[in-house]
Length: 215
Image (cartoon, rainbow, N blue to C red):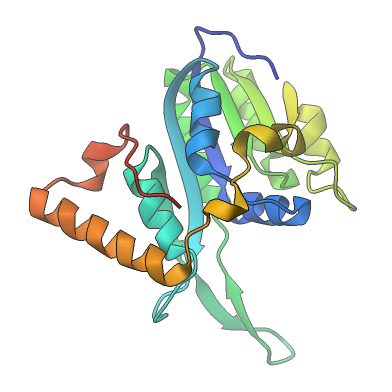
């Protein structure tokens, strides 16, 4: 992948899509390393992670990750999922973040030179074209290594650069032996948030700080 060292870069991460892509490739992402890779390529202005959350759940498997990302250099954009019943009477949950990501990308565009979109969703082709019309370069991160590929052909063709996340595996893959059991992870995060509360420091003030909570 190619970046100019003076470029102002922002990452826009479709959380559900990235999770599905990594799962299909069989590895977990080390988000601290992911941030480090792109910080080394230019001036990283912002890294935004988009995901929908199911409300009223006693435990959400994604909540520890969201809390960690929020304290370690990522801007979290979340919204509650919507529940509905389809024509056959089956309960469905909807949590699309495409509009939020698109609006944020267009608003940040004047402050950027290069947008990195972590998604294979073909619906983003128009966004990529709009950003390019404003003079930005756009890289799309997904994969062709699955069957079928996780990236839509029209999105890959529109992008200035396609980055196969499989090629980044050695740099961003989390060592399975370092994974903390869920119970220990929840305890550590609870202690971490309590410490932040005592110090009176908001997560927004800590966006550029890498803390030592291992996820």
